[in-house]
Length: 113
Image 1 (cartoon, one colour):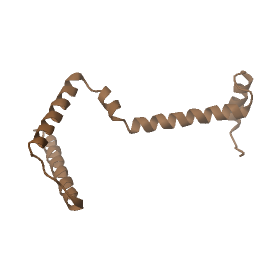
Image 2 (image 1 turned 45 degrees about the vertical axis):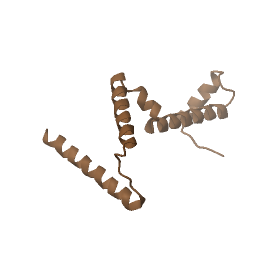
Image 3 (image 1 turned 180 degrees about the vertical axis):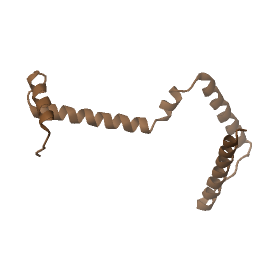
Image 4 (image 1 turned 90 degrees about the horizontal axis):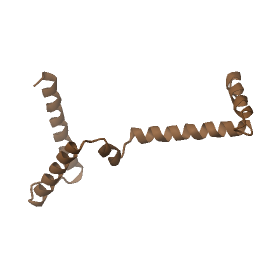
């Protein structure tokens, strides 16, 4: 593979080799590409945080609130207080309900109530 770079970048590569840290220009380019790959992977992880990433940012009070809501939800399910959504039609009905509640909340926030 042959790659063309600007004179400025070529000078930078030569400077890195001359520093003694790298034996040749290929090592400089490989290191730069490894770092670019690491940066891309880091950006992807930040764009898609894991549950652990999210939970570490929460306060103990927020975590307690989540635990209470989960416990209440489990108790509701055990008591038979749930709706069973089956098939595409059921999921569409569920999605429509979620969207409607979201629109209602947004409208309430927009009106300042």
